[in-house]
Image (cartoon, rainbow, N blue to C red; front, side, top):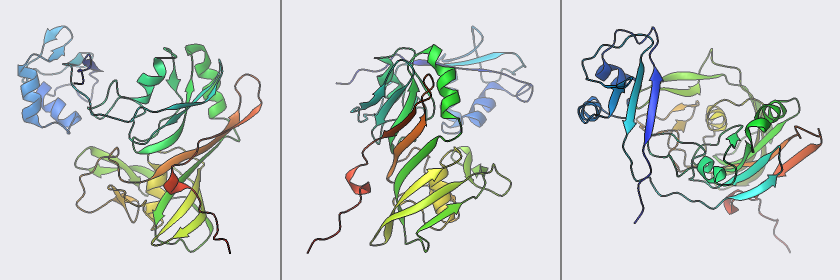
Length: 305
């Protein structure tokens, strides 16, 4: 039987915008995945604190206070834990993440069952340079130590760095290669409050798409992202009229599907971080990393005969 984790303390500092709210109302507004009734239960169970003092639902928040939810241990969902080291030296660590394994804790369900936790068993100071969605597989880049973090971050964000993905999108794009530049920003979304989606006035974003193979009702494509907005590939291909096959969240136009209550981490689609190219943070040598795609995202050899 799976053992529970060690629990976790979620902390936030109250600022001027939150000052004057009552504790219960603030928590229900800030964390809408749990109902107000559930937050009241947590408060009455003694799990919520203002500083070191137990909080009450009617307590009024003031700027400068520290609000804490001391979440008791819980049993996390099972996840795939098969990872592989793609590159390892004292300056740079590249790891293959399977689909279904979260990169970082989040969503209220995952703490120890994450790629970060697995990597830190080998490199206790490791920190990720980016993250992949839970349903996305492929290359994740880590700084293996605290001292490697800033140089690697500069290299990762440096000119010439390339991030190339593979995915299966719906339909048949008319052009064999095309760019998508729809801006991405936050839009209202009831299950979360706000959600990244295609939005006029959002942050500039660019993806370059190349069709690798046409299939029945779908296309295997390669996508290079020149910006790193949340859920960029899913949003951009949906904006172009070709949502990812099986995506439960984003539909045509790059916005949430009508009537959906899906969360960004919900699985169903195929997306794989296939290639990453960057300058080595210490030597400047150009490094090209590759992670084999799952079978459904590999090109089929032409028929013989």
